[in-house]
Length: 158
Image (cartoon, rainbow, N blue to C red):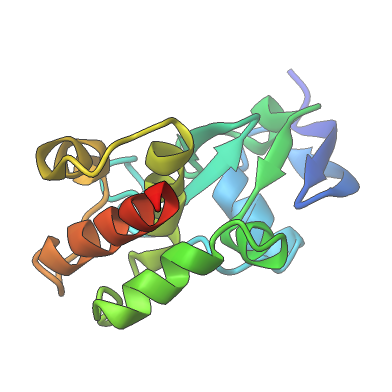
């Protein structure tokens, strides 16, 4: 088996080609090779959610996916969500509700929350908590995060 793999993917709207080690995690490729450091490396076991990115429209743990598996995929990181304005309302709500605290979980939390909102999620606090349950936040106690997500959903209804 080859130790290196050629990959072509689209990251935040830009075509990227690279030769990567076959066992390189997607989040490490994004952070180290592309200097997209918004997605954080936390537990490296897929349980904390800090490395969450969007792959072909689905939330994915970047520490559990190999860069080679992302070949031909469309990847959106927190930088891409910010650049295209997709996360503006949610970022503002996080700020207004003080849902940021230390900020380590915020990129993954925003990506997960956007997946919930874009998937037609409602302002049901239990459903929101269930959806973001795979994202650990050690600072906020989640209430402010749930409030921020509800604010965005309710604002979109008006």
